[in-house]
Image (tube, rainbow, N blue to C red):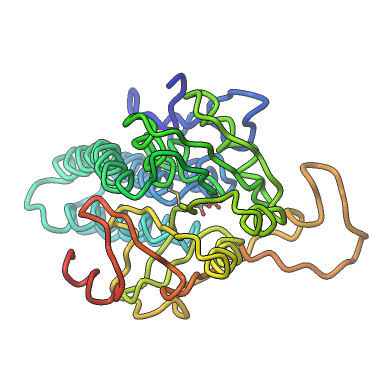
Length: 343
Ligand code: MRU
């Protein structure tokens, strides 16, 4: 693979600027927590696991600035910074999960402020390294669900670009291809921000995995014609009962898949499961700027003054999900039980 999504180098977080892909390959260097928060809000880095990892390094960067403070004050300020970091994008729970992991390490340490900074840096590095291993494991489990010859529909980008490497939904596809299965991917463009058109196609083309781009509204027709064998997508938050928040449009695809009796799979690490939330109704949905809908890139496509809605995610009810693929195995309904058993 000729690119990296994020890299920790010389006490700096280097991000591939995903806003510019596929036309330009540019990097953004973050030297402080503020620039990481801006990068997460602006989607320089995006995808649930990737923003969790970026946020963890953001906390490390922020801790450097607090290093002179007495320990009690340091922990207070670190806690405030964690709250700000978590608020940058509300739906993907991996962000909170990663930040909490660091904060717990910090709070449970008996060491000095400098010791704590070292400990949380090591923790952020572990989160990044573990993520790649988790995706590979999840990919192995998921590929058992892929037929020898398969047309696979995916939505948004749940690939290397959304994780430290390998991806979740695209990890399943990569693992199936590595096993010699003949796979053809259909990538929905994913309005409004075109993560499918810009990122999924680009990423799969780098690996020579056959991919065809379709607009979002073509999926039903392809399913009706028998051209799709399975759907696999990522997740931003999975409630205790299996209801799953993912990129807006995922719910529509799940209804279509149900209608056409096509298996609908969610691929996600267990860090995406939020057992504190009993059902999808309680998942906070991020609403983003209207300009993402009124414009196509920088080009206005809707009248000035038009009323606009821009929810970035939707929730697929667990009844429409065939399996949830995690690094701990493939979960079958009833998901409430299955999730309890692995966590
Ligand atoms: O708004 P984005 O691009 O961060 O949304 C990303 C998605 O919805 C992904 O499908 C999800 O985070 C899973 S990534 C492995």
